[in-house]
Length: 404
Ligand code: CTP
Image (cartoon, rainbow, N blue to C red):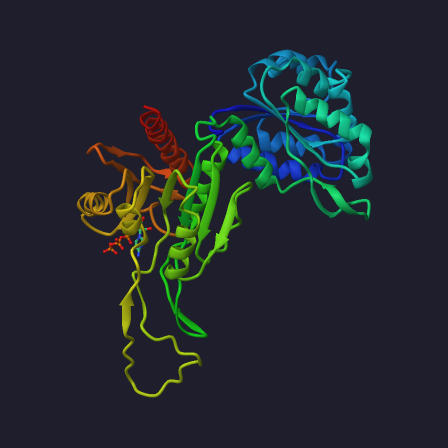
């Protein structure tokens, strides 16, 4: 989403400046071209050289620096930006922008840009709650600025409360969201992710290698495109994406109940979970002790949640996943047809960069009308964006046919 985008990162002075360094790293890693503007006070907290090294561009600090103006003047910087991010934004910066003041390079550039502006304020909690500050922030929102609210926690001034700059990963996701088309606004999407665990006894279970990364990326992308997202996830180590409602589950049966509990509101179901196909017939209440040299576990079949959804589709869009080790297209096409899906995402997990615990994937989209799209090696979040773009088209077509 941010690949090749031109971003201006405006940094104003506060202890949270160090987090802007991490944000810059995430932005450049995603392929964005980032130019940093620092206020004088920001330079007191972290040296511009840090931002210069990580962005690969000189840092802009002084409105009247002739050498900087020769390289790239602040108006063209503002003009060619796809996005401005102000992080951390002090009460002073928000106050100045909301009043239309432009007395340094950062405020001048913000005033000169037509790009969307994402503001991430950070300050002492009393300052944040001050009605004058709140009025200024509201003014920004009314003028279409995107304000990413601070979070609660212990603040550098020793206070506890609202005013902390959010995690750079969340600001990064908010930046992606600002630039993402909102083609799924009004759409309710149910996503399942991760593995399920089928308990044998209180200390053992059957499961699989699914990390949940693909499903969590799908949930994040759907949220960024404006959908209301419920994420039903088996056990993973991942953080629930910002703005996503999460329902944690453990076993396939729990996942099935959660899916059917949330089904009535859903326009789209995306089943990226790796559901265990079998579970032990009996779960031992106590830890099983070893005795014989061999142990036979009796397993019974779990419900096939997606197949059940396919039998009672009721106009919903159904998306499945097929992770295969051989005959990818044949197996995926069979599942698409048997489970009555609109689209299936197929990947060969034996290919490098397409396995369970990596951040990339190589997938094919098989459509119900027989079309097959082959995607190159992409990050899981890029795959998710590509998938959600297809979901947007399917959902629009569905809504149109409902209207007729
Ligand atoms: N699925 C499901 N419930 C199950 C098994 C699978 O909802 N009990 C869903 C998965 O979430 C995925 C799709 O069905 O979207 C295909 O899952 P997969 O495990 O690849 O296929 P299976 O139908 O289980 O077939 P097999 O294990 O024989 O490959």
